[in-house]
Image (tube, rainbow, N blue to C red; front, side):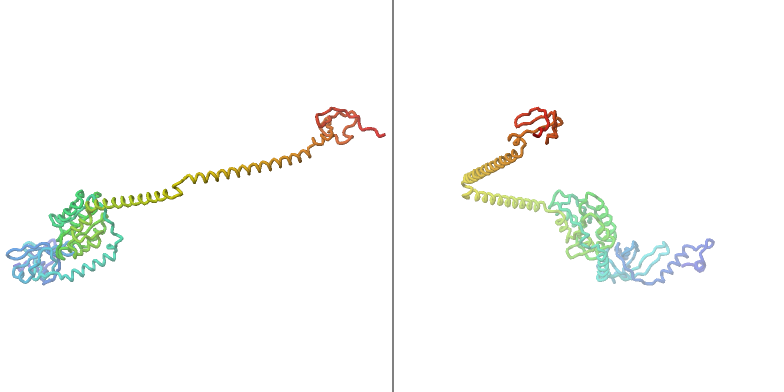
Length: 414
């Protein structure tokens, strides 16, 4: 009990000269919290510890990093479902308790219920529609997986069946494949931050060719971390090809929608990421056999065609080709010779004709007929008697040779 004087003091304003005692502050806080009465809250159970006196645990906010401890006393436990456990999302009727002695807050749970599956599905579908509208699920954003990954990044629970299934099936198919495994929580409040950190670490590793996120089956609520908006956005931003292998065939967390490949199970992921060496060798052998058969068939066909051509009469006796061409060559040579002779004869006749014409026009022809040409000393030709007066020297050109002469002038008329 707080004394009357203490209560009266607590009602006064707090000042440096008259500060409140701690008991006064805690009394005020308790009185204020008591006025809240009973409230319904929603959250995820992250701790669940049963004792003889009751159940002690922690309730975490679904979106924010905020947690409060709670207590379920034995008298209230009998009124709650028996299947509630850590990791469940619940709504609770609580009374806020404040312990003045140590200044701690807690929730006294009077009623506890599972969050309705319909409510969770509705929230999930709203988020799915939002992310789809943003284009995070578009097919053109997805990248193909490498044919033969040398190193695979695996995000899974430690010592989980999912890890064993992936490693066993991958090594059975291709023994040389290497893994970089990061163990994370796969349910509970630490799942989202740990998986996000693992994705970012493997995505930044240049040796990792593809990333697999694997978890075995579980109930709907246990798989909810893989539909968390933050995790989904980090997966969508991942540059390295990412494979989602969460739960079983019927499970569909949002991670499946943004992954480059959705595998129905961890085993299916290993089979779809790693090619089977025996199958690939069989395919190579089959391809070589088919190529060999086609080449052999082609060569056989062409050899048969050649043999068929060689067996034809036109090729069986090839001398006819030479004989026929020889006769044709002889005819062409003879014809060419005749044409050349004829052309030469015509040219000779034309030459004689031109020679005759040339001679008829030649001055020599005139000289041959008894004429002469008088060439004066300056080289000009005397054309009249006036050109060669008396005592004019000139040269007389005859048909054969020349004669020097002196003019006596024009003869006197009788």
